[in-house]
Amino acid sequence: MTVTAPPVTSSFAVPRDVAEWVDRIADLAQPRDIVWCSGSLPERRHLIEELVEAGTLIPLNPDLRPNSYLARSNPQDVARVESRTFVCTPREEDAGPTNNWREPLAMREELRSLFEGAMRGRTMYVVPFAMGPVGGPLTRYGVQVTDSPYVVVSMGIMTRMGAPALSRIAEGAAWVPAVHSVGAPLGYGETDVPWPCNPTKYIVQFPATREIWSFGSAYGGNAILAKKAFALRIASALGHDEGWLAAHMLLLKVTSPQGTARHIAAAFPSACGKTNFAMLRPTLPGWKVETLGDDIVWIGPGSDGRLRAINPEAGFFGVAPGTSRETNPVAIDMLARDTIFTNVALTDDGDVWWEGLTPSAPDHLIDWQGRDWTPSSPEPAAHPNSRFTVAAQNCPTIADDWDAPEGVPLDAVVFGGRRASNVPLVAQANSWEHGMLIGATLSSEQTAAAEGTVGALRRDPFAMLPFCGLHMADHWADWLAVGSSVANPPAVFQVNWFRKGRGGRFLWPGFGENIRVLAWMLGRLDGTAPGVDSPLGTLPAEGELDYLSAGVSGEEWGELMSVDRRALFAESDDTERYLSTFSPRVPVAIYAQLRQLRVRLASGE
Ligand code: OXD
Ligand code: MN
Image (cartoon, rainbow, N blue to C red):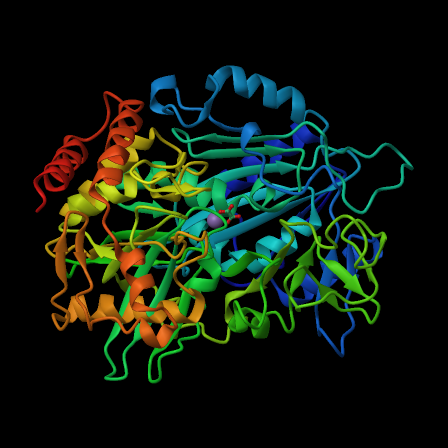
């Protein structure tokens, strides 16, 4: 086996514990050689050249899309596989009812036999990385080994990868080991395929020992282990022990025409438009929205009695379909160059296309599986989960404080689901505890309910359903505790961009018009919007949110903001049943808030 040492610089030393761990994994997985990644530009260029040669990356037309590439995955490897994601806590009850649990020792045995010789014939890359600005108080470190150069290049975009992170580890910073193999060893003389993977997949978290093992996939969160596996699952366990929170949230800064700037973190289940909201282009003159992150936020108490937040990532891994000049003009500009696209369609002039990018499709494309495609083809040209991977710096609205080492002060926390009924456009929670009930019971519903009832709800507490490395109710307790550990916790709001009217039509235009909701939140924070009380919390008073200018009639506004006590009472029964599935760990404050909500609904308060 040959080992390519990291380039030696004066501040570069390979920590002994990392070197020993790398040796152990190499003994098990038996790679052909080992490459330590420094994160340098020449290294990146070299990896990309190799990927182009291997057919994994197709260069796009440099005149139309400079420095950008298209990857096509194996059709069996196109998304996160929740059914193959395991949280291996020592005791089953600590993983809770929402996770796939396996006994750690038994899982280790299984992994050992899977990984034995798994990297044969391939290079094993050692990828040190920081989640958060190197040296920051909320920042944590990791090292991923992987036999996928595509994953290395993706990690180089999504994290602060390379020598500075390894230096911190050498200085004694704790680090999370993450082992990744595509699970496709190459026999002697065997030719490789552009997207090696294995039909058997495992994404395994050991929260107690802070380890990650992933086998069989090179796609997204299955393989970029810094993202969901580390920054959410392992980080929720780290935060539990250390007094901070890992949140599946976007982070933005909104500035009023008067120059008041506020930082807001918002949780939405997957596919509710987090990236669009994080990059919102306001329709209200004089308002500015800047982006700090679109997927993950780490939140901890600052020394100033407030919560502070960082985006631990360094890039965006967003869903392409549906992204257009209308829905997200900022993202369209962001993707103009330096982007890796995966599973989108290729145009005849060497550019990319996906459903929703333009009102009508080009006459001819090569689809995400490399086949000829025309508008009459039966399947979409881009896979519905096709993605872009691009550095945060490429975002035209990236905020100047997005990588502030100490994070930004958090003014508000927002929870939003996809609700056809019951939940108004916006409401402010009465307290941090009330806000935590809203977070814990966050839900989406596909169809509007019959009057006075509620449609089938898919609960997604804190939007963390597939991403929590501990018992979900313990995560709720962490939110309660971290909020009450500071003198001034953020305000909490509930939003719903997806409420439907009687005709089944969306009542709110969303996208850039969501600035009106942010503006009302700033009014609440500044004390200029008194609002009106309701059982759900404080709602905008008439005149505080100019819905008419957003194209919403008075009648539609009435429907959008209506509080249907009967339906909400029925929903609260459902909520009670839902909470009981986490018994006996549901924090008393959550039950107390549910009781108070029911009293408010019943009393006509
Ligand atoms: C994601 C998700 O990919 O939440 O970010 O599913
Ligand atoms: Mn996400």
